[in-house]
Length: 375
Image (cartoon, rainbow, N blue to C red; front, side, top):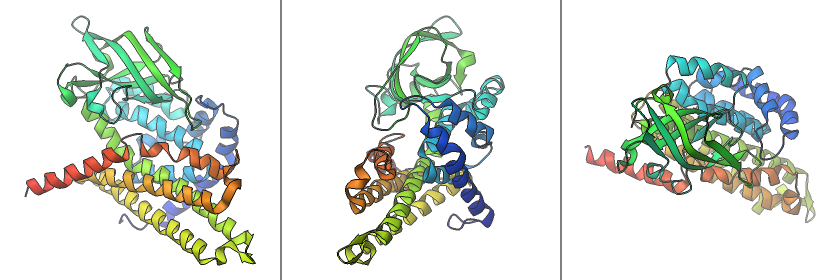
């Protein structure tokens, strides 16, 4: 299968997911409390078997799930993605005991996972993180410091936490730990963001961890983080494509029905050309996301570059498409509760999290020059 043509069964599954999202997930999302984890929604994702697919599917299937859910219910998409982001390090790097304890609960939606990488002073520059892990006996550490802008915090049940075990070693001195939320010394607070998701800060006051809590190897945590991000970056692009498609669909319907200047909006060339541009950019982003996901599934050498390109193009495209959709809808799109008002708040953050657009451009350039030097 190429990256540019989906099989009929894949298209059918995407349509089924859009229907499930509209009929079963959106009603639960609408009952959720802004800024809090919607556990009923997470549980329903588990009951539908979607969370377990996070650990049995490839990157392309993950992208198709995220894109399909995003078109009908961004809250469901985000809940699914955050479970995967938080627990993928356990799936890929955890011990048999760690996987046995946590993955079944994450899969059925009874445990909420979170990925704790960013800090107040280390956002885009993840290698500069300063949460310290100081030795506490021959088999343990104490975590001291802060994490910030952590999705699902402070409501999560387990956190994949990245801490500095070797000072001054940059990316080579970071270790990934699996930290249950009930560990002594771990507290959290909520952050009030423009998108209605649970996002918070975490404070570590001598939180105890042991070798049994390490994900991967000591001082090799940056690899755990990058492996996770290389998988999820294309699917962030898929989330963006789903939002762009929802905005495009709404705009086509609106401009076809809206009377203006003696005709329909769609009859104005300026409007028709804008809608066409929205469609072209959305499809181009979709194809790049699929190509990056397929490269990941095939174990290609250029996954970091392709993942960065997919996330960059798709998130920047979605921002353009949603903004243009708002413009073509006019003031009604700015009313609280309108689909585009919701998408306008949702679409901004993906250009920042899991590596800002500037970081993606840096990765792309680095990979290009590295390939030149290798010739």
